[in-house]
Image (cartoon, rainbow over all chains, first blue to last red; front, side):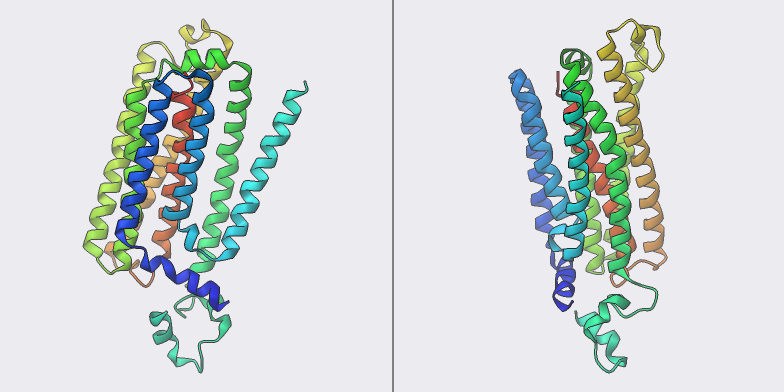
Length: 99
Length: 222
């Protein structure tokens, strides 16, 4: 467990600059999605918006929520929870698409 | 590691299983377990909002043009502004924790105050937004809404439900931050006992995460 312990200690070392860079990245991505929506590429807006939102979500979880530096157990928890949700989504659409 | 080593010197050896007893060897303080509990709670939030996003996705698929017609009635600049406000508050929350980890109590409190300011600003903007919709006769059960297409009715129903539940989370989050602020002030939360604040930070980031998906889906599908 000592390795997990080391992981645990890393958040103490996250420099302020990292958070500011993460914030700048998130803001730029937001403006990018808005720009794409104004560009009037109707069929592209939703896929691009969802991809950018997923990317922003990943960034927030990894850095702001420290998952990048967290105990591996939490990684598996997160994978199980998100995996469960993805199964719900797939099953719903599998059902809905064949009605 | 140095803190934990210095506190546990009373024991013969900081054994490998030490981390079951908490990071700093203080009885009753177990950061790993606390954080795990918080994450488990966040997963229930994922399912709460997730279910609503599935409903949204199915109806978006079914009524794509009517959702677009509903979406163009929302104000993109205002939504963008609110997104930036929440992202900024997420950063100041993370910074407040980083600052307190380095022992700077006063600065941490100032950053929390800024975060609270962002939360308030978000709610004020949101209330003006809702107010504008109400003035145009768009609110649950209104005659104006009833005259719209079914797709638009569902769109606005989901809009009020989902942004409303999200706004409730913002308000609860602000309350938690206030509580955390008081506990920092009283000295109950400090650099060596910071998990309480970490967990409130996690909640606040979750609020931000939900909005990251709400914003493009409601405002940008037009």
